[in-house]
Image (cartoon, rainbow, N blue to C red):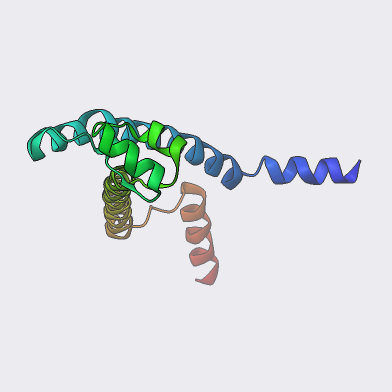
Length: 148
Protein backbone atom coordinates (compact mmCIF):
# COMPACT_ATOMS: atom_id res chain seq x y z
CA UNK A 1 0.00 0.00 0.00
CA UNK A 2 2.96 2.34 0.61
CA UNK A 3 4.03 2.25 -3.05
CA UNK A 4 0.56 3.28 -4.23
CA UNK A 5 0.59 6.23 -1.82
CA UNK A 6 4.07 7.29 -2.98
CA UNK A 7 3.01 7.07 -6.63
CA UNK A 8 -0.12 9.11 -5.91
CA UNK A 9 1.96 11.83 -4.22
CA UNK A 10 4.42 11.80 -7.12
CA UNK A 11 1.75 11.97 -9.83
CA UNK A 12 -0.25 14.71 -8.16
CA UNK A 13 2.60 17.12 -7.48
CA UNK A 14 1.97 20.58 -8.90
CA UNK A 15 4.98 20.53 -11.22
CA UNK A 16 4.00 17.17 -12.65
CA UNK A 17 0.48 18.33 -13.51
CA UNK A 18 1.82 21.58 -15.00
CA UNK A 19 4.27 19.63 -17.12
CA UNK A 20 1.53 17.29 -18.37
CA UNK A 21 -0.65 20.24 -19.36
CA UNK A 22 2.33 21.85 -21.11
CA UNK A 23 3.08 18.68 -23.07
CA UNK A 24 -0.54 18.30 -24.18
CA UNK A 25 -0.81 21.94 -25.25
CA UNK A 26 2.61 21.73 -26.91
CA UNK A 27 1.53 18.68 -28.91
CA UNK A 28 -1.62 20.44 -30.09
CA UNK A 29 0.37 23.57 -30.91
CA UNK A 30 2.81 21.45 -32.92
CA UNK A 31 -0.08 20.08 -34.99
CA UNK A 32 -1.31 23.62 -35.66
CA UNK A 33 2.16 24.68 -36.83
CA UNK A 34 2.46 21.54 -39.00
CA UNK A 35 -0.85 22.34 -40.66
CA UNK A 36 0.20 25.96 -41.14
CA UNK A 37 3.41 24.82 -42.87
CA UNK A 38 1.91 22.00 -44.95
CA UNK A 39 -1.38 23.66 -45.90
CA UNK A 40 -0.56 27.39 -46.08
CA UNK A 41 3.13 28.30 -46.22
CA UNK A 42 4.57 25.55 -48.43
CA UNK A 43 1.86 25.90 -51.13
CA UNK A 44 2.51 29.67 -51.21
CA UNK A 45 6.28 29.14 -51.40
CA UNK A 46 5.73 26.54 -54.12
CA UNK A 47 3.55 28.97 -56.05
CA UNK A 48 6.17 31.74 -55.90
CA UNK A 49 8.99 29.36 -56.85
CA UNK A 50 7.12 28.21 -59.94
CA UNK A 51 4.25 25.88 -59.05
CA UNK A 52 6.53 23.42 -57.23
CA UNK A 53 4.96 20.82 -54.94
CA UNK A 54 7.54 20.45 -52.15
CA UNK A 55 5.95 17.26 -50.89
CA UNK A 56 6.97 15.54 -54.14
CA UNK A 57 10.53 16.80 -54.47
CA UNK A 58 12.92 13.87 -54.29
CA UNK A 59 16.09 12.48 -55.80
CA UNK A 60 15.94 8.89 -57.02
CA UNK A 61 18.63 6.67 -55.50
CA UNK A 62 17.81 3.43 -57.32
CA UNK A 63 17.67 2.48 -60.99
CA UNK A 64 14.02 1.42 -60.77
CA UNK A 65 12.96 4.83 -59.47
CA UNK A 66 15.12 6.64 -62.04
CA UNK A 67 13.57 4.64 -64.88
CA UNK A 68 10.05 5.21 -63.58
CA UNK A 69 10.75 8.96 -63.18
CA UNK A 70 12.01 9.16 -66.78
CA UNK A 71 8.85 7.45 -67.99
CA UNK A 72 6.62 9.62 -65.77
CA UNK A 73 8.27 12.93 -64.69
CA UNK A 74 5.38 13.66 -62.29
CA UNK A 75 5.83 10.37 -60.40
CA UNK A 76 4.55 10.97 -56.85
CA UNK A 77 6.90 10.43 -53.93
CA UNK A 78 4.76 7.67 -52.42
CA UNK A 79 4.96 5.59 -55.62
CA UNK A 80 8.69 6.30 -55.97
CA UNK A 81 9.27 5.01 -52.42
CA UNK A 82 7.48 1.79 -53.31
CA UNK A 83 9.85 1.27 -56.26
CA UNK A 84 13.06 1.89 -54.36
CA UNK A 85 15.06 4.28 -52.24
CA UNK A 86 14.70 8.02 -52.70
CA UNK A 87 16.08 11.13 -51.01
CA UNK A 88 12.93 13.09 -50.02
CA UNK A 89 14.29 16.65 -49.97
CA UNK A 90 10.87 18.33 -50.12
CA UNK A 91 9.72 16.62 -46.94
CA UNK A 92 12.96 17.61 -45.21
CA UNK A 93 12.53 21.25 -46.28
CA UNK A 94 8.95 21.27 -44.94
CA UNK A 95 10.04 19.80 -41.60
CA UNK A 96 12.96 22.25 -41.36
CA UNK A 97 10.65 25.23 -41.92
CA UNK A 98 8.23 23.72 -39.38
CA UNK A 99 11.04 23.50 -36.81
CA UNK A 100 12.25 27.06 -37.45
CA UNK A 101 8.77 28.54 -37.04
CA UNK A 102 8.07 26.48 -33.91
CA UNK A 103 11.44 27.41 -32.38
CA UNK A 104 10.82 31.10 -33.13
CA UNK A 105 7.34 31.03 -31.57
CA UNK A 106 8.69 29.29 -28.45
CA UNK A 107 11.51 31.86 -28.27
CA UNK A 108 8.97 34.71 -28.41
CA UNK A 109 6.83 33.04 -25.71
CA UNK A 110 9.82 32.54 -23.39
CA UNK A 111 10.95 36.13 -24.02
CA UNK A 112 7.47 37.43 -23.14
CA UNK A 113 7.38 35.31 -19.97
CA UNK A 114 10.82 36.57 -18.90
CA UNK A 115 9.81 40.19 -19.51
CA UNK A 116 6.60 39.71 -17.52
CA UNK A 117 8.55 38.05 -14.70
CA UNK A 118 11.06 40.94 -14.59
CA UNK A 119 8.25 43.48 -14.56
CA UNK A 120 6.44 41.61 -11.78
CA UNK A 121 9.63 41.39 -9.70
CA UNK A 122 10.35 45.11 -10.25
CA UNK A 123 6.84 46.04 -9.12
CA UNK A 124 7.21 43.76 -6.11
CA UNK A 125 10.51 45.40 -5.10
CA UNK A 126 9.19 48.94 -5.68
CA UNK A 127 6.12 48.45 -3.49
CA UNK A 128 6.54 49.74 0.07
CA UNK A 129 6.50 47.08 2.76
CA UNK A 130 3.04 46.52 4.20
CA UNK A 131 2.19 48.39 7.39
CA UNK A 132 2.37 46.26 10.52
CA UNK A 133 -0.86 44.84 11.80
CA UNK A 134 -2.77 46.79 14.48
CA UNK A 135 -1.99 44.26 17.22
CA UNK A 136 1.74 44.48 16.43
CA UNK A 137 1.62 48.28 16.70
CA UNK A 138 -0.27 48.01 20.00
CA UNK A 139 2.28 45.54 21.40
CA UNK A 140 5.08 47.89 20.36
CA UNK A 141 3.43 50.77 22.19
CA UNK A 142 2.99 48.62 25.32
CA UNK A 143 6.67 47.64 25.16
CA UNK A 144 7.70 51.27 24.85
CA UNK A 145 5.52 52.26 27.84
CA UNK A 146 6.96 49.43 29.92
CA UNK A 147 10.50 50.62 29.14
CA UNK A 148 9.67 54.10 30.47
